[in-house]
Amino acid sequence: MSIAGRIERLPWTSFHTRLLALLTLGEFFELYDLFTGGFVASQVSSFFKVSSATGIYYTVAIFFLGAFVGAIIFNYIGDSVGRRTALIINMAITSIALLLIPFSPNILTFGILRFIAGVGVGPEAILVLDVLITEFFPSTVRGRTLAIGYTAAWTAPIVVAILAYLLLPHKYILYGWQWLFIIGGLGILTIIPFRFLIPESPRWLESKGRLDEAEKIVRRMEEIAIKEKGQLGEPLQVQVITSQRVTISELFSPLYRKRTIMLWVFEFLQAGVYYGFASLAPSVLFAKGFTLVHTLQYTMIIYTSYFISSLASIFIIDSQKFDRKWQVSIVMLLMGLVGLAFGFSSSPLEAVATGFIFGFLSNIFSNAFHQYGAELYPTRVRAFADGVQYSLSRLGNYIWLTLLPIVLYSNGPVAMYTVVFIMALIVTLDVAILGPKASKIELEELSK
Image 1 (spheres, rainbow, N blue to C red):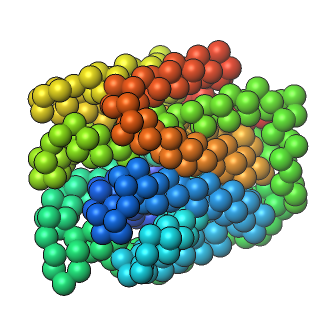
Image 2: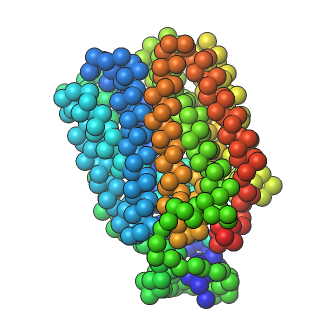
């Protein structure tokens, strides 16, 4: 009777609700930091007297370079030492960096601290939300659970937009952009103690042969389930392979080669589509000639669509008729088309309407691909495999958010979103041709 099989039979209990809340807290602040960069780039440029493209590079692009490094390091730690160890250390690093960023004496120091913040944030979405939800929750609800977690976390861009509107045009001892980083750093500092309440993944413990530790956690989950829901059904028969080593060569074994190639191409290019809008929308609106106040107002409206989108994905993500494979590929193509329309927009109504539609599509896509990438590999290498492929999206973010602003300021929004559309088209074909179906397939069966 395997640990994984016992987890698969469990109904939803207060244990799952509490765990989901604890996991979601960190993702909220990852998104807070991520969207803060897009809002403050122009203010940082003015403060340090550098060009707009340079400001975006040091505020946004270099942050993702750090996230690329952090995703690899911490997800390797997650597979080798434990998920729990990694998720405590990464938040501490992020908090310290965010609290120091506002006091940077020059743009180079600012960039180094943004890199360090990125290292800390790098594994947050993958290791904390994607991997742990995938491993703690049964296959019948894991997609919906992940979507609920991201939906709660996606209130962060709305919070950032409101704070930016209230703070950026003013100076309260410090400039508004400085307060945005301080608020984020203090927020993360307050949630670090809650990280110690997150248990280690029983599936990971089982894959490492640490059965006594896994037994204690699962027995507690079962006791809560029996107390709240009554007797449990028979555990599912699940084959679990133990392993003490994490090797990248297995990702290119005949069993996983096609998935690995598909995910690596996908992650590298989708980053330019998703964050070519999410991180650059304020800069694009500003480049179109809208004032700072109007840009903040329009962006606030647009970013509410991300929350609504994530909410809608709860009811879509586990659909077998519209499998996660198609949620990723088809919606990505639509994002490319709408992004191009946003580039062509000239009036406030056109910009807000196309931006809102793009945001609405974005998290149907994002929630689906976060679950999709986490469920295609076995537990013994999941954090590492998912971390490596997701780190490529962070590397892609660094490259695309370095190059796309140059295209934006030299050739305009239409040229930039034409590049974005081409990337979206390649991603669509990549997933449609190489990706397996995944919705509601038991985890160990899907990841064989």
